[in-house]
Length: 181
Image 1 (cartoon, rainbow, N blue to C red):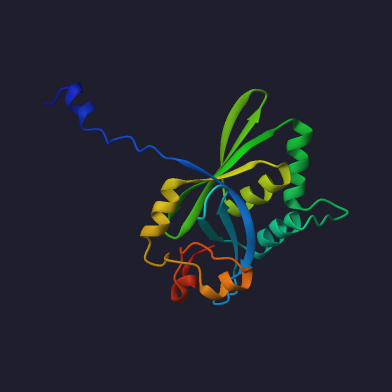
Image 2: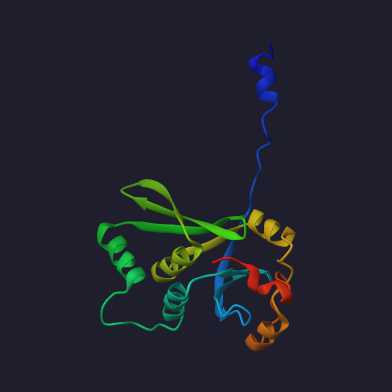
């Protein structure tokens, strides 16, 4: 029988991750699937990360980017109002993982001095972060997983040209439509 010490030495090594600060560059429509994608850009770098999202979330993100306001609050505006009314602070959001072609996010919130981590779809977390002026991060491990995925090799040239900027190669043209929302 192995001792407790032997079991401790067999533990998986701790993976240290690096959080990369991002900004929302734009929202595009994938010409192959006709699905919207939010494009995150490294704040102090040249990397981009496309995340396929639903049409409602794309509209919510674009409305905030374009400073379009409605008379009555929509869902993400309502969440902003709840946070403000109750004194909840959204410290940051993080795109924290990529599993089976699906991105995951975590919202880091603080209420009455206590911190909470809330699982979220990246699109909702981004829409809320934009409204609350919170920082957006992507875990370096997500970039690593994105680069190692078969279908993630670069954003199509037509999309890059349409936006007038050279986006980092993350998704190949033929596979651009394979991401799940």
